[in-house]
Image (cartoon, rainbow, N blue to C red):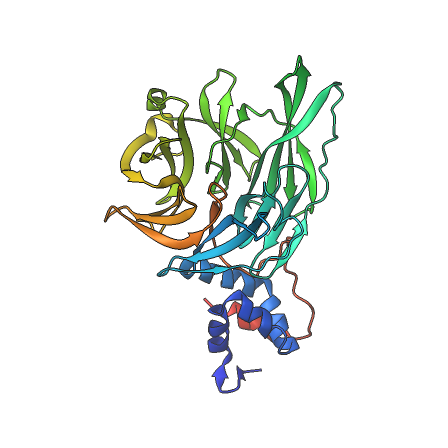
Length: 390
């Protein structure tokens, strides 16, 4: 087939690469040729690459109150080119009614959701494909009696070595003594989309993960958590998806001047890890932004900016457009702060306060099952056609 109607096939493919996922899913129903082309792994790769360069969005999770007073989760896409947002129709049993639903990470259009108890779900919101991960490979209790297991950390990201996404899970075992609990040991397992199974890692967790709002961050093949080491120092616990090893990254030395009522959030800004320090309470808040110029080096932390004081702003959410940061307002409204103009813009996005989570996101055709094998349609021109582009 030399063309599609009057269009050369190379031009036809260029048009397809610019279509949104929803339109491409409908195009797959036109004929076997179109189905095979759009299902081709090379086409999926090129479509993802185009969206990464042109159509990056912010995925936002929030809770709304129903007429019965119940909380219901909602996913929305906020487009960075101009401002617009659209609510996503994702049908997951875990998704809508789970009050503690966490948005763990994003990898090539796939997101990871969990309630931090039993369920971990991978979902592609654009294709509406989802998959519940199999049960943990770790036993409920180790050989030591009277220990209670609890998922203390989850992370999701891309392994550039295997070219597949991975989920990492840290399980802490707590011993109950006189009604007070303390961590006794931790174990680690990894789920890979390449194998479709869990495996336990023979590694030591060098720090204990603690909760800090808007801190869990994936960046350049590494997932990060707020943690406390054995010497009670604040650190960043990092897990490298490629070599499946932990790294402890020191916090800035000047962090000691802040007391523990100050919140710490970790974001990605201009290709660097950025630490945001701000009060947990107060009518007006100032936000100190520190950037790690050289990854993993303590002395490379540099204070670069102070935002505020701002009224009616609760916490930072995500940097977008490089010069703006989305933030959660105290009344449950999302606002955008322009770093250059130093102005706050209210956005028409509302939710239950402190229910917001965000990710930088790209729509894609990538399957949550870890592979996109082309069906044998007996038409080698699909391979030839795709390989000619770029």
